[in-house]
Image (cartoon, rainbow, N blue to C red; front, top):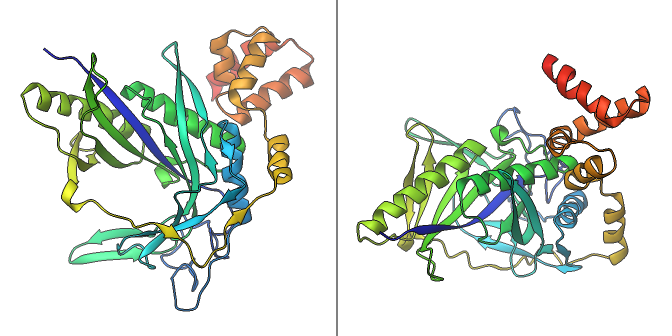
Amino acid sequence: MTIYEAIIGMEVHIELKTKSKMFCGCSADFFGAPPNTHTCPVCLSLPGSLPVINQQAVAYTAMTGLALGSQINLHNVFARKNYFYPDLPKGYQISQYELPLCTGGQLDLNVKGTQKRVRITRVHLEEDTGKLTHVSGGSLVDLNRAGVPLMEIVSEADIHSADEAYAYVSKLRQIVRYLGVSSGDMEKGAMRCEVNLSLKPVDSNVWGTKVEVKNLNSFKAVRGAIAYEIERQTEVLQAGGQVEQVTMGWDESAGKTVLQRSKEEAHDYRYFPEPDLPPLNLSADWVAGLQVDLPELPAVKMARYVDEWGLLPKDAELLTESRERAEYFEAVVTAGKISPKSAANWIIGEAFRLL
């Protein structure tokens, strides 16, 4: 019987925590607001309206790229991604394609005690879409979210299991929270994942047909969808069938992937440079300033706790899980004038017990 290996690449969309939208002055703090109250001629795409780039969104995306070891491209271009859907008033989405803000990079993971590196293909900026609510007899559209800055992080196909994918998205969320560029709250839609998955025989370099699983909005969904899709495709191949190139969704209640779109219905987005925006040219000094202002990242902080303060790796990992927790730990060490080990033992043993 043929043994198969999963080949997985991920696209993670992260809403940036800016005050205003990507190309207009509307408030980006839309969660819980009455429908269609955070809109203007730009995000409604009314005739004559023109977009203006949000500098803070560019900075946040560049910071994320720097944290991932990406190259920040000083010359990058916005592009129109053309498709029609009710939650997209313009009939196209302003995104980036051939010349994104960030290229390359990597993310190092600890997956159940094993070190794993996932390469980053690109990190680019785009605008979010509106939100549809389906009701009896029709659908309602809320455009409060339309135009909110969205950062897309695309990985190479270096992931091979549901556990590795879970570790990858968990680490990404930890980093964007450390940087303060996003809440990363998946339950509010601030972080959404898409998976591209195929199988290949373990003794072959030929990849199988790719299946895309879209709109995974929880870590549980990421893990469950990948595990199910690996099992589904394995059963198809072992029965002598062929995996079809399709787009699937995840049915949480049924615990399985469901068909959304076949290959024949796949989009051709016909990207071309956005004519209403000039190329975005950044200065090397501006990027260097962002690099200087980056906070100490969790992997560096954890290594310092182990190497300089003598903490156990598992304790250092717990204490660096969030930036707030790490800052509290360091404040206890400083204020109490006690050893880092004693402070760590007290926080993990006593403070955590009361939380």
